[in-house]
Image (cartoon, protein in one colour):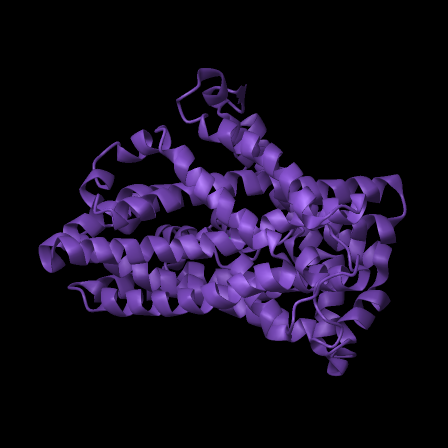
Length: 469
Ligand code: PFF
């Protein structure tokens, strides 16, 4: 079967930005920034995006385009040993499992969107509403819709499905985000939020914050999930990968900044004397518990319809961001199955869909509804649910490990000359550039070393309850 390609560089940029811009940028980033010194966190995060993440991103895209393969195919084609073949499988199983937890969160967002549209803000804003919602039966209706939409988009292929969805959803997302920021900035006390976000407090930065922010930047740019290898395998030869990569990283950072300017002013509007770092330490807490209360409070200002409209608009924005990320991560195992087994996109989707639905249902049932799934395993001094185990194993541990292995693979197995040759295609000026030298040195030395440290810290902390810092 001939491999389908993105129609243009901009098509690829939108699809890759669609993958990068997700719940991480819109919610996790503002929450982390509010806890860790505002602009101090932002500066550090921006540094990580361009100096640590961008080289990895470019390496993934180049590897994909060079091999015209999914991650497993790419590793085994160049690696040619059982070890690299195994690493290739890890690079496909990880996105599949991360896809499971991302699907569950996307379903929650869709459910909140539906409820906001139905005018049920008061229900969503009640204490304990989130716990009731995630254990309700209606969740499975929302799950069916999200899975159906994902299936429809992926079934239509690279150009007509992934690229087309990104071409509509991404511009819509940017406009909606700007409109919401514009609106929030007109609210009383909004400037307190802007100040909080833009005035750096360097005293909050410590080793833990450093590693957390790097891990967040890594996740947020969709690295080490095989996504950019897979999307890279659909880029045309004459497109400039380096330029496209910079655009994707820049867009993702820009959206994260705008999200900070959206969430923090809204928080200060609701209570000008608030300390946002006390509010919640998770993005889940922010989207599903804090924000509904703020939206409900807006009713005093703009009435029931106004507040429901703003809430629906916000959840739609997050839903669009989540959908384009979700399709990117599911495309990885789909492409892998198509490439390795030579089967059609439809068959691949159906086969994986069945397993994914089963695992997602198990995850969704592990929030108190089914006992053995809620206390699935016990390690690191705590009981862990099925959902927690997926997060701990795949997101916190194997993800940085995959990043580390990718750097080693590209530099020491595929070799720098081949990486250069691929990056030069569509960008002849790359040869001999400062960027090229930086990529060579960083990918072969300190980037894998940093990822190894994150991997070790996470494994010690998550599985053995050892907090090094
Ligand atoms: N950039 C996405 C986010 O920040 O939410 C990264 C991502 C995560 C994409 C998980 C896909 C995914 F399944």
